Image (cartoon, rainbow, N blue to C red; front, side, top):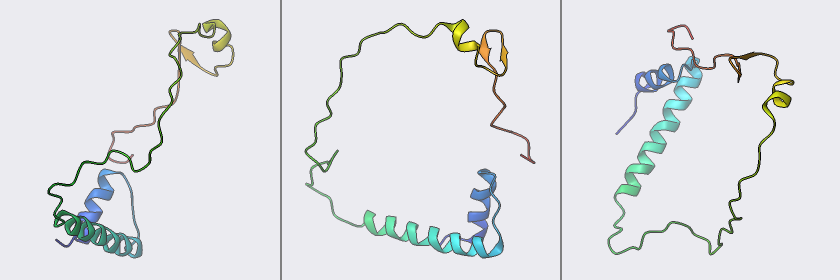
Length: 100
């Protein structure tokens, strides 16, 4: 399955990315290689192979989960540049407009 430049351009527009013609050509080639590798992996017979969740014998040691009191809200809010209704106000990071 070959991927086309138009498909890469479409995915890029969904991610609100713009590529030059040279970048588009490069990324199209790279995406095509990745898709070909995935298709090749799908052809591998894995019948009878145990599922692997990790390749090391490391054991994750977790600390005991103990609740501790948090910071006083008034002290925290002293360092906040802008707040509204008791919450920290931050700039919008997702723009749903077409230009965005």
